[in-house]
Image (cartoon, rainbow, N blue to C red; front, side):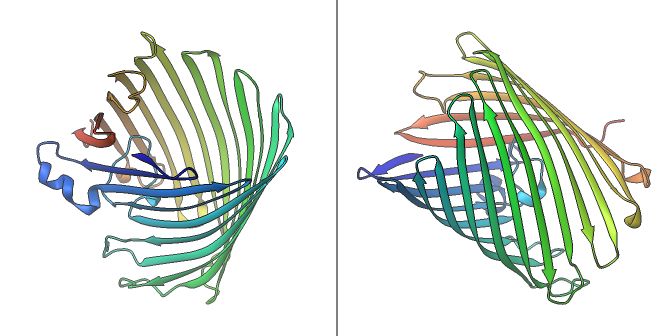
Amino acid sequence: MKSKVGRHISTTGQLAFSSFDPFAPDDLGDDQDRAFKLGVKGKLGKFAYGTGYSAIGKEFRSLKEKDDDEKNLEKMQLWGSWQLGRLGVRTALIEENSNIHDDPKRPHMTERGSRVSLSYQFLDWPSLGYTLSYQDSSRSSSQEPSGYSPYEGTETSVDGSLYVSANKWKASLDSYWVTSDDLSDAEDYRIVGHGLSGSYYPRENLSFWASVSAADEYYDSDQSHTQSRWVALTVDKALARNRVHFSGYASYYTDTNRSWSLDTEGFYTEAGILWALGTRKEKTKGIKLFLSYNLYTDNIYPDSDSNELAAWIVYKFNYDQRSFHRSLYSRLFEELD
């Protein structure tokens, strides 16, 4: 849902529900199955400002959500940005609260911090630019379950991105560095990561996207080292005047840490079709059908291996200029022989 308040202020909002059982509508009203987002932004000359809030339930299922760290999480942000010719400056105050739905096996974590970003565009065509960001935040835990020690520390991160784009393609090279300082010196760590991604549009109704990334995590408490590698590919094809879309997605990742007896790999693939309904202006109208397959392999503990086949049905529609989005998730098989 989008609306304007005066000439320079606008608001956006999203509300979505999901359920493992499409035939149990009462479950859709549970906060744990809900995703809520609200934003307000405005502009005064070259200065833009805004605030945002989001809360994702721990049981909410989204088509593109592969990481459980994005669930059971509440985020708040207050930001301002300035555009000075080719140079852009953005500052933000951020707060995140995890485990908002009281999982008894996890502690509550609160993170508060500030972020400063600089961007500079070197060329207009092909578009070539660079962004650099710095964030400093404090983290603390509360309501720790049995077996968890209280945590209090700071985290500093620096990330940069070099991007280039032309008429039919775009690419970016990303790097980031994160360091944590635990006041008890028990869980200090460093993370260094790099990624390369790109998109190609040979025709208006056909697109490809690919990504390769690597991350190395270093933990001072036990002198261990975790290596993570990930590759992904997406293909989208539109037919019938862009009213029917076929899409496919596949990813493969590995996580290795010999000190922790960790050696796992996973493969995820997804194929779907979208039928657009209504007029071109009613972009939220449509029905999506997706099939996905998830394979997890533990090379050290084979009993932990798993594979899953699932089906998705998603539909959207407009009513009285307000959009309503419900996702229905149906698990076909938990374990495939």
